[in-house]
Structure formats: C-alpha cells, structure tokens
Length: 102
Length: 153
Image (cartoon, rainbow over the protein chains, first blue to last red):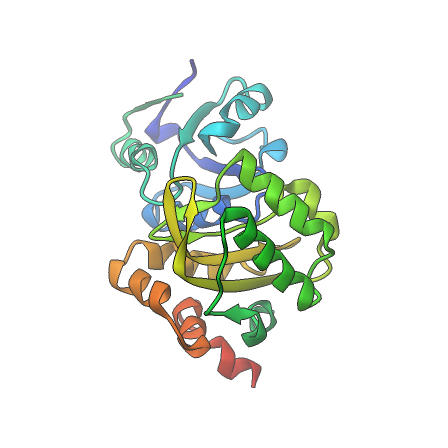
C-alpha cells in the first residue's frame, strides 16, 4: 500500500465517474480547506487520473478502478462527499506533514 | 455562462415522486424540456444512480449521468427540483435534487456554493424549504455575484 508524506503532497485529484458532480463539489471544499498550502486540487473522471497526482480521492465504489489506473498513488476512498473524515485526514496530513496511507 | 446554467424555468419546487427512479426521471424530463439533453441522458442518470448514489447530505442529491452520458448533453444546465414530501433515497430522505448536465466546467461555481450550503445547516434548511425560485437562485448564486435571476433579466 503506497504511503506519502503530507509535505510531499502537491497535487490532489478528486475523481468520480463523470467528473461532473460529486467530485466537483468535493474538490471545491478541499481547495478551500487547503488554501494557503502549496497544493493544487483538480477534479477528473476516474479514467483520466493524471500521472502526476500525489493523492487520489474517490468514492469507495470506484476505488478499485482508481487503484488499477494509478497503482503507485495513494488512493483515499470516501463514502460521503461532504464532511467525510477521510478527507479531513488528508487536510491534517498536508498541514502537519504526517504520513498518509492508501 | 452562469446566468443560463440555472434557468428559472428549471426550478420546480412542488414536485412529487413515488421513488428515487421516479424523482430522477422528473429531473431528467426537466433537463430534456429545457433543451439541455437528449432523452438518452435520463437513462444514463438512472444507471449512474444505481451504481453509486449521488446523495450528498442534508437531504440533497445531485443526479447526473456517467461519462458516457456526456454525448447526450447539448447545453450545460442545472435543474432544481424540490420534493416537499421527501423521496426515499436508499435509506436517506431527499428533499431537493440539483440535477446536472455538463460537458464543461461552467457549473463548478454553483456546485461549490452548494457544497458550502451543505456545511451550513441554516442555509441547507432554507434550500430544503424554499418555495420561491428567487430564493433558490439567491442561495445558489456563487459568492461575489448578484443573484442569477437578476443577471438574466
């Protein structure tokens, strides 16, 4: 299972099936929570996860597809798109420079 | 731009649906009616919902298609349908659907505002209880912009 130090996270990608709904909302929230950090947040369809993503956030039901596409990248599955503890853990890891597993 | 994305005619606040699929069909029919999507888009919305729920919390769902459905989109648009009696959504109760049809990113600002609303219980309740389309337009207007309805006038 890949691990990354929060201080090495520079690009977070929020992926969903179409990249038009839930991922958009979650990306906008993450962007606000990470404002002031040297981290960019993008949203894409799960099939177009960019190679330079450091962390990928996906709905739990899409996690296997995301792992197949980005096997060496930390994948963070979420159940709810707004206020999910897994998302808060990313924010904490980035701010503290602590490890993030996935 | 944002003015056209959420038209007043696509805000319907007194809807009824027997179940989740029925609610999604109502949302899809609204998008078809305003010329945003082909009827095929509605099937893609139903498929997407069956694979992963679009429930986002606070009684709100955001039905939309899968990637494949994008070819059925003519014009990016949103529709807001309110179901005062609530709709069972896989165990959750949905009062408001914000239906999405998008090929581009023009709707991102409105969805960002919706995400913010979901974190503020008072505004989320306002959205769930809205009976005037102007209130919906005001609530969803991205910060820093005047209400969408006035822009469109």
